Image 1 (cartoon, helix red, strand yellow):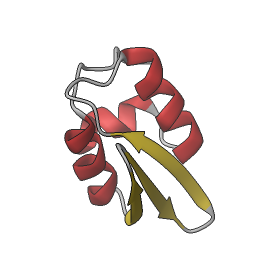
Image 2 (tube, rainbow, N blue to C red):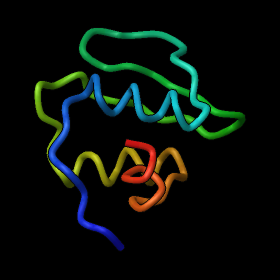
Image 3 (tube, helix red, strand yellow):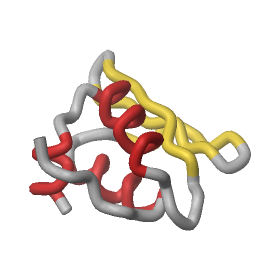
Image 4 (cartoon, helix red, strand yellow):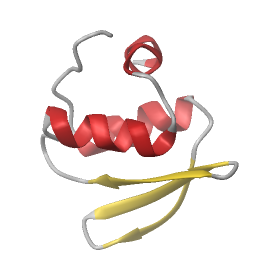
Length: 71
């Protein structure tokens, strides 16, 4: 497993869009995204903490290596 990078919420959304996710809506400072039946909630913070990013990727069914490769 690769080490997760420090990224912003906007970067997480952009990378997930490259991986085929679509932005459904934004509720406050959180973006709701979906690819097929898998969905995830991305906090739009200036820096998403590593543990939070790991949780988002787990929700989305995306491996850290796959995420890093799509950056």
